[in-house]
Amino acid sequence: MNVAETIIAGGDDRAPAVWHGSRQWTYGELRAGAYALAARLSKQGLVKGDRVGLLAENGPFFIESYLGIMLAGLCVVPFQADSSDQTLGRIVASTGIKRIVVSTRFHHRIRPLAEAWGVALDVESDDRPVDGGDLGDRPALPEIDPQRDLAAIMFTSGSTGEPKGVMVTHRNIECNTRDILAYTQLSADDRAMVVLPFYYCYGASLLHTHLMAGGSLVVNNRFMFPEIVLKEMQERECTGLAGVPSTYQILLRKSRFAMREFPALRWLQQAGGRLPNPLIQEIRRAMPEVRLLVMYGQTEATARLSYLDPQRLDDKLGSIGKGLAGTKLEVLRPDGMPVRPGSDEVGEIVASGDNITAGYWDDPQETDRYFRNGKLYTGDLARVDAEGFLFIVDRARDFIKSMGNRVSPQEVEEVLAELPEVVEAAVVGVADEIWGEAIRAFVVPVHRGQLTAEDIRRHCLGRLPNYKIPQYVEFCDRLPKNAQGKVARSKLAAAPTLEGPHAP
Image 1 (cartoon, rainbow, N blue to C red):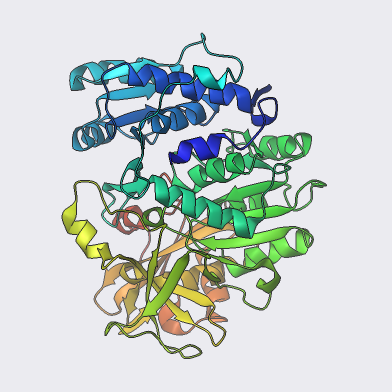
Image 2 (image 1 turned 180 degrees about the horizontal axis):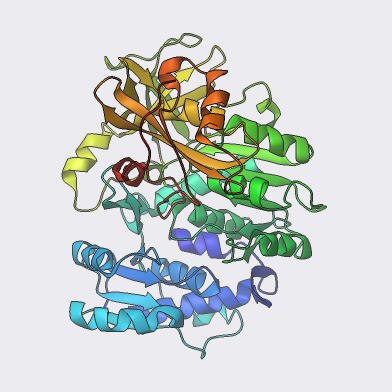
């Protein structure tokens, strides 16, 4: 079964599927556009399994193109919209892309590049189908082996920052989407505000789940103006919002999110990294009736690996919960044995299930490193409590070695987040002759000048041992982030220091 058929069949022809700006698109319109593109691609000499690039901003054109490419039995490769020309060129060359579907917004930019690469373009057109059409008019679709045939190659930044293409099968998407639907309890009545890019697995999962459930998406690409997004959430009566930690940090510190009324809102989803506990508690206090779904996942697992039952949020604060119905999560010590539940033992999270992808495109070395014996070795370190709930300690590569002690950046960042004057903060290690690695904190304040480095250290001194106190504190307007909204620690680690070290 072609998973795109399952996704796009979720709603009635006249039911709303997408709002973008002042316009509404129905399921019939989306289906018509997707099947029309599938038919067009099928007539252009492309064969099942060929890779087709997609360069478009979030919106109906992206959705119908993404699904249309899959419907044709082809493998969609969504491009990060702000990738450099060099990065796009590497992706095109490595995946053997033969054609790129592009929106009018990016046509001018990509046209000379495509000519140099020898790649054809399929450009967005105003001449589009406007209704669902007759089922009999739809093109014949190739047979799909859901476990083997690729639906998409989703590029994600690895530990080196070099994008890696994750090979996602039709079966991966179907199983992970159904598992997410089971715990989110989405229905045709749900309407999500979407601020995450669809080329990111978290954003794509919103597309998959809401359309499969027959619900709808409100696409707003102006999150740099959060009050505009919140206003549309109210006007469109959105039932949900999904975000990464920085989404909620900005909403809580840079908008009236906690003070506004959202009568229709019934859930919030948070994934893409750990949201500090103090901010989770702020959301809970401001919106006690809204279900806050704290989740954990990786692109290598299609999207989602675990979630925390909202009813356990208060007594399991900081946990990523337990594995999805179709996902088995183990926490293994270096010797391969499981950690003891309820102990302080820490191990690596290892996942197995139908959502675990086929590895990295054209990268057998990295595939062998992270995908072994049908399991995904996530690189995330965790402990397990007596009831089986998982608590991530940190990523193995992010630990700081200070005075011989292993320091989790997450622990220090959690303390910094307690300050209401702080929007967000990130901690890295910097080489130091005395400390081995000194703690270096980058802090984004709500307003410039309202905090000093000494204010930061004084707060930390009351909460942390000496070797975990930042010796360097630097204030900035924003933290560098990758396409998924996660902090790019490698860029922070490489930044020149602006002040001398301070002894705690």
